[in-house]
Length: 229
Image (cartoon, rainbow, N blue to C red; front, side):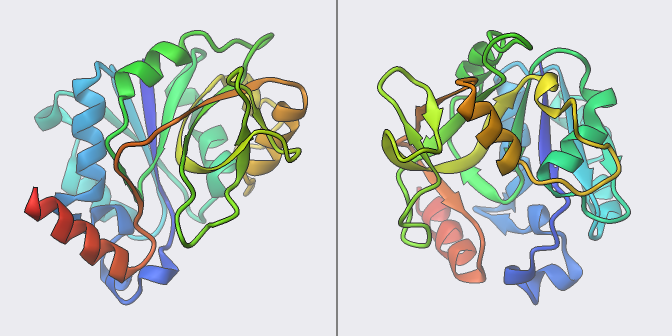
């Protein structure tokens, strides 16, 4: 199974750190955020990785290369202007292929079981579930959460279920992006909400370590936590 890491964001809230370094290359615990993901994806048996980039994207390519040192082939999907999440994924579909794939936000830290997520992804289908989301207990900066998780594993946006926050980690079938132009910015949430209304989104709660590394303070806290392990 292939995976994609989203690494095209500008990281405005992380400035001035991101003025000279793309956000996924910021280090915590002695290694760049994106490397934590790559190592876990490789260990989970992912066979190919796609990384999109825009802001200072060449730095990402220079730092990671073709993935040989990780044992995981890396292909890149450059964007002249960031295309948002759905737009970036749609542009990268030729590199991802026709099978379901895993997507990870490059600016989160998470100890998710990617092998388990990949196994769930194999059950996604154009005429069945289109997406499977990893949800986490809502942090202080997003107390209202994003979606509801029902006891049967379906995810909703209609007020039902346990209110949780989307981790930025999920698995998708390419059919979810069928109507998205590959060169136009497009957000992921509207696609997910439409699929939820059709009962085509499932999810699971993750109670392990997860950090949305959105500010310099959160980066410093994560770095201290990882170095203390």
